Length: 334
Ligand code: 5GP
Ligand code: MN
Figure 1 (cartoon, helix red, strand yellow):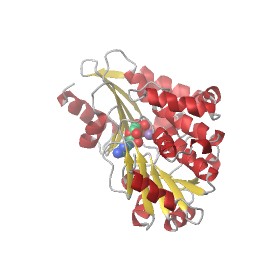
Figure 2 (cartoon, rainbow, N blue to C red):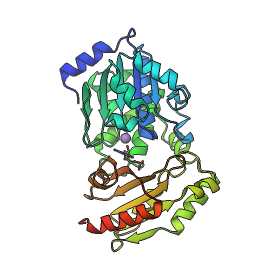
Figure 3 (spheres, rainbow, N blue to C red):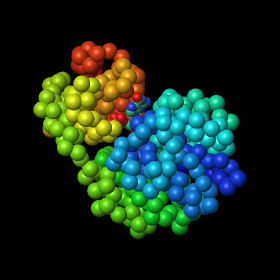
């Protein structure tokens, strides 16, 4: 948590006269959008308007969230996003640890004179004016809740805020399953339900939204899943031509990598995908127990994240990327 002095300084900045901006990471997920909108609704209840800005667009299954339609998407509205960041007095940086994770917004945020407040649960945060970083917390949404709790303002959490924060905790814990899901997480989730978050509706809005094309894409990927390193590593992949053929939409491959990890005996699952527009391979890593995907992604694949969930990029063909990966993973001890 921030120190008492930091909390007091941040609260002094949270006044209606100041321009408040909230930014979150590239390819926003449920926790990125949930924490940003959750914080926005809390600030609104305090009488403070904030603008949420994302570097690029986010999946349809998150667009039901209250005020999701008001999010400024940097790649579509460069001028509005740039001006808001330029004029900001405070920029909340949620669910990322480095300006390199916010795409086109990174340079603007770095140059801005605004005070930058980081709330994030990824490893190795970079320099910000105020840092609340805790890698043991499963979701940034939970940290936003702790921040509100620290202010003794849980009473300001309305249904909109509760729904957003619940969503991010639900998605980042894989439905309350991953290791860092704690009793505290469940207590907070219980509070959020009491404040109006509806588990059945949120789950259905977020997860029961498959399209037939997504399921066909999944069946293609599952049909050729490969095990290496004596069954300890599952490899999944998709080519750009296949994404096009199946009418890929943003977010369609979310969660595919987890199927690899569901195979008994696996310690790591990796999903390789040719980026639809740019010339690199996007990689998702997931692992069990102490197999550290953050270190692995940082060291070999230009990425990072958490111990059990990370991402990265590689600048070779998908075939060569997978070959390199197989060589590298054989050298790892686990
Ligand atoms: P995903 O596989 O769902 O894209 O990402 C898993 C986790 O790793 C997320 O917490 C995400 O923020 C992080 N992550 C994904 N891609 C990258 C990347 O290229 N660099 C870094 N540093 N983290 C990433
Ligand atoms: Mn997160």
